[in-house]
Length: 272
Image 1 (cartoon, rainbow, N blue to C red):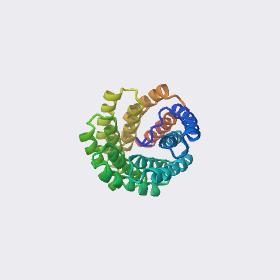
Image 2: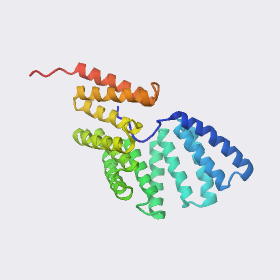
Image 3: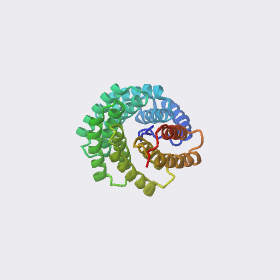
Image 4: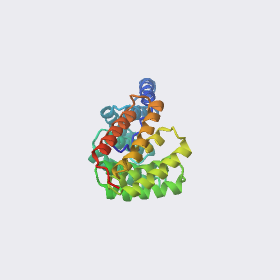
């Protein structure tokens, strides 16, 4: 199982705590400032984001729709905060599995940001990334690859080759290549990205551990089960220590380790 770079749920307990704090903030601002005050809308936006990261996707979609509707009316349809609400709605729709609608929202957001902010603004590039991810979920890999390469080129130029968002784009592109079964290319890019994550963020950063898992998965698809099992067991040990034994990423690595082992057992050994 290839672990996507899209949702980062490395520390779910922090998102749960953030959700409670954002709800309190929103309740106070609604009462003191009113329901359409920009600061109240900021709290609505932050709460929706916390709900999305905490796995409450349907609630996040509902609150993002409400925030977007008010911001369009109060701030205008092209205000950057309104565009942020569109972006957040697209993320929540993706997380909730509504990919067709998410694609529509993501394309509209990208078009508006290109016009309002410019084609190389970081928010515009983020919208490109979001649309790429949506296309991956929809299984439209050639489109996703083309957009992913464009996004990666822009992030390298605008943010730098070692910026975390640049590394995220590298990881996404490696995932597309894996889905297209272009395994040598995916392996090479996964290794490059993993080395950068280890150097920039540290060898035990959750993103580095995700890349270890992804590289092991690609190696298993190439039939290199011994290498894959060794790497995935290392990733599993680190995820248990860093994230905890019951974290979803840890459990995913446990399942993949088992599948790699079963694949190794089921594959006839070559005679020398």
